[in-house]
Image (cartoon, rainbow, N blue to C red; front, top):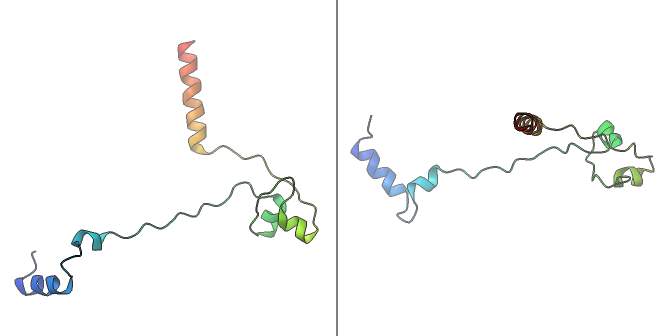
Length: 94
């Protein structure tokens, strides 16, 4: 259904001619906040942000707590798929 002539005129009057109508429909994209995967075990247990400094993070140093260190990072699903794809190609070529 098309808007009637009156509404078209009202819309055009409300939007300055220098503004592109398509720009109004575009929303700025939000920055995606990624969680760190490698915070020290002490900060993870305390549920606080870790600066991931090694061998011990600043939070542990400031609190005079022994930093429990870092867990080995598990590969992501994408990394696993990439590795299995490479392995299957290598076995086919052998």
